[in-house]
Length: 139
Image 1 (cartoon, rainbow, N blue to C red):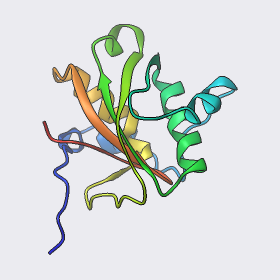
Image 2: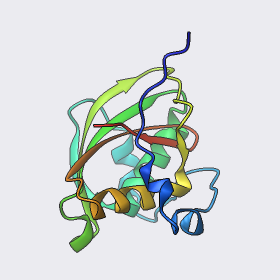
Image 3: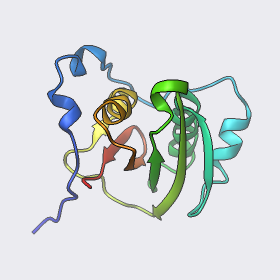
């Protein structure tokens, strides 16, 4: 029997979900050269605050360097609507973890975070793995 992780994909029920999605082969990148360096420092307990695009670029750098690994973040969405900034902590890291069946592609990532914030979530747990998958954990 395959044990699958319970994911929260309610954001896919929105009319705009598929209009805003574009399939991507990898996470977005940034010109900020410090973001990939930050990705190499990711470990359980790592905490930071940054813009959502830089966060996605950091995930891209991590996924490229370690595509078999899975990171789980606790992401605070409190300031997302006002400042487009998020705070996060790495709460788990697994080697050679399999993504759940309901994992989504990186093209939905920003929409999913925005939807969660708009619908009252103050924080969410989200996991990412290479090359381009993420999933939001059910609370």
